[in-house]
Structure formats: structure tokens, C-alpha cells
Length: 383
Picture 1 (cartoon, rainbow, N blue to C red):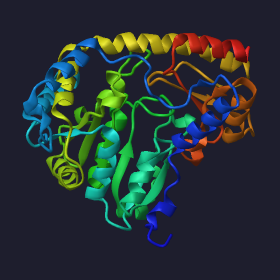
Picture 2 (picture 1 turned 90 degrees about the horizontal axis):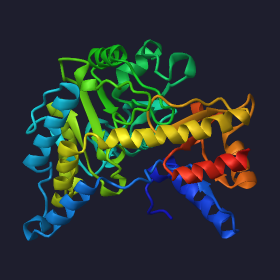
Picture 3 (picture 1 turned 135 degrees about the horizontal axis):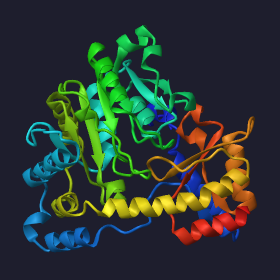
Picture 4 (picture 1 turned 180 degrees about the vertical axis):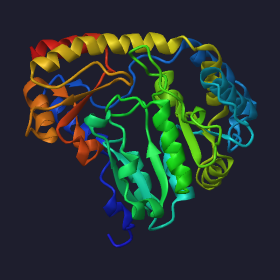
């Protein structure tokens, strides 16, 4: 079809859609599939948040178009949350913007920063949307390998100078999907310095910053430097408050980057439904203890599953953060083949590491976002 854009040829089909198709085939053949694939929390959103949405939705004045950048109350609540949680003070009028979840924001940021032919530094393995954002914006994705010997942190000193000069945008993501790794404040400071030295926009996707399973913490990028130039950080209520379907989050940082992101969004979307913003305000103001309870459940599930994976010969441990187990395969085993074997032999669906890039081969990812009883059933099958 000659009317289709060439960029579609550069984009793989969204990898989780392929997993859904394999799952559907197995279900159609009568298999009771235990799905460790997509990271979509099974636990409900906080009751007070749901109630806030219901009450706000009854108010007819909220049924019109929302402010493009978020209501003043929402942006103020985001700024207050950052100050309470991380000691970061931002201007809610110039340095905060509402997002329809992080995913759209990541792509819109790339569209506002990257010109055709510019380089986008993308961690690998990583959330596939970083690569997609680079391609959609006309940029050239350049991988930042994440390897276990470095704690799944990129080696910034190894980036070729010619690549660094062409780079306009760099993505980082800690706590990291899919590896579960965290980054130190020292590393984030080095990354900030690298971005400013090379005049690169540094985007830290902090979607899992509250999903900590070992009692530690993940530092905030904006707290790593008193200088906010070149820095933008994305925060999502999806994982923090089990609100994936609500599609709400925010970005904060360099006012110029916020302006660029806002300019793209003004032209391409119409903002977040105001009752959802009101519910999000309730979450940020009143549900601080909710996350620790959910994290305890994810850790319990990891403690059930990890021994069974080790008994199969996989290299697996309870993650420091996120609700993912990044399991290393025996030498020479390919990720896609292993995932197919799990589904065919045990009716268990796990994500092959290659979904997250070529440096994910040799791994499979198990998401802990399914009922604990189903995790127990999976363990019984594997045993």
C-alpha cells in the first residue's frame, strides 16, 4: 500500500501485542495460561482515589476540555509531591506538565527535541518505547548497553565522541525495566554532567521510583543536581498507585524542555480528563502508605517464584525494585526459544528478553502482576 508512511517499516509491531497473540492461540487450544508477560498491576487502585473520580465525574463543569498542561491544582500537587518525597522544588507553572501516562509523553518529548538524523541514546535492554520514540521522531537510535557486570548501568565514558556530538536526547530508566536495577545518586550526577557537557536533553523515566522491594530507595534525577538545565524527569501514577488504565502522570524539569513537550501536546492531544486529575491529586496527597503494601505483595510473589526458577537452572534473584524478575538463561539458550518452551510445556507466559533489545537475549522477564495464587500454581507446574 503506497500510501503508508515509510516509518512504519522501521517500527516493529508492539512486542506485547505479539505476546497477546501467542497467549490467545494457547487459550484457544484449551491451555490454562499463567501470564507473567505484561507489567499491568492486578491490585485495584486505592478506594479513596476511585471515590474522588466518581464524585468529580458527577460535576458537569468537568465535562469540557481540560487545560492542555494540566489544571493548576494538579500541577501544584505534583510539585508538592516532589518536594515531600525527594526534596525537589519546582515551579508548577513553568516546570511541570500533565501527561496522559508516560508513554505518550516520551514520544512527544522526542518529537519536540529530535530532528531527522539526530542521534537518540537508548538503553538496551529497555522499555521498547524509547527506541520507538527515536524512530518516530526521525532520529537514529544508538544503544547504551546495560550489562550485569556494571549493575545494568550504561558506561557513559564508552560513548563515541562522534555519536555524542550528534546526540540530542538520552533516555534513562531507574528503577529499571526490565532488569530491576537501581541507579545511585552519583551515577545520576555523572549522567547530568554528561548531558550538559554535550548539550543533550536527558530524560529519566522514573515510572518505578516508588516500586522498591528491598527497603532502599531510588534517587531522583532532579535531586542529583541543583542545575535543572537539560534535565527532564517523568513520573507515572500507573505503577505507584496501580492506575495503569487511568492514563495519568507528569513530567518535571528544565522549563525549555517542558515548553517543547507542551508545544507538541498542544497540537496532538487534548489533555487529561479533569476528574482523573482530581483523583490523581487525591492519590499523591493521601495514599502514601498504599505503595508499601503493594510492594510487600510483589516481594512475597518473588520469594515464591525465584526458588522455582533457580531449580530450573535459571539465574534469578529477588529484584531490588520494580515488579519484574530478570532471569538469566543457561549458556547458549535463546530467549525466544525458551519463552516458547515455557508456554508449550507449562502453559506459562514470560517475556523473552529480546523484546527489550538485542542485549536482552539470554534472559526472560517474569512480571509479578498476577494474583499470588496463580504464582503458586506456576511454581507447582515448574516443580
